[in-house]
Length: 483
Image (cartoon, rainbow, N blue to C red):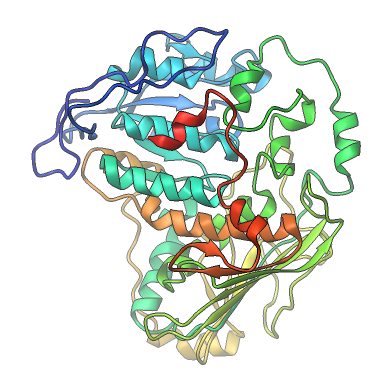
């Protein structure tokens, strides 16, 4: 991808390798500390050029992202990277792009091919988004990173700052944020249909990987030999050392506080995204673990009820969001809610079909505003006014909702080319990701957190405040926090 016209915000700069020398498999990369004469800035393509895309994580959701981005016709796949390049989850992508260079370490990929890369995807476990994204942005590369943006509050803070510092395009992968719900929520908010919201109940009541298990049973079950194809040291990345366990990898990482953000991080980004943005919620003042069934300091609970309190802002009243997960931990549903169904744009999870269990509703929310109650789903699902009689009464008063000009993947690539702006930029998605990280911290500690929105500190729990940054990174990975 060549330089863009000067009117684009991400101006051209000389490309350069950010890593010093070729990295060896026997040691962690040491990020070069050499001074730069100038900070790297991203290039943008002219309308007829394609974006050269390097992809980190090529199975499961990472593979879905690659296929969706490639199908737009707006990018070239120039590099593939996965810590288990011989794993069964990578086979399809390797067959699809047999001649594309392959790597097991994103640091080696960026060192060797940095000059040929315009943008990077991070379709990897939650805890690995941060180092990949920070290195890419520091080299002036645009980034499509899966949700949530990172595992800890402070990592998200650093990612938001880097997006601004390096003038790159960042897009978080909550795909519905470019769909019908995005445009409807904005139009209804702008028109005053959705106004003075005081309460939102959000829920995800389908079974999860850790349900019915304990940390001990999962570790015993996963005590198996490590695949010879896996680079375990690179897979661990910034995380504290863990002995390999089969129940840490291939989606199972989502069960563990050390690697993921559980049901809330997985689904909160798809359910609460438009409400968070268009109600200007920002960061909460309080987060409480109201109910936790099967609390553990290693894996997520069997069921959780979390309460988030957001103060008055921009002449809007305070809002309380209550989050419910767990098969039997059902939310209170208002009269007229009716049946719920899954949105057609929700990809099937790698663990199987996503289906509501028993009487549980599909993942979604109920929004209580002034004079109106709204029933919503996940991803791009549009809102309904309930009960039906009220919806019929409002039919002629609803504003026209514009159609989407691009799906989430095309939106990102067009932003890389200077033709659109990322709808879920890190500036937009960062505070939402931080809300989710605070919720998970309350889960893990089984407590109430009082949060100073201005200072971005927890004021009632010193230990929790220290955990905003998470544990120190492993030796050799500290530099990613200094970019």
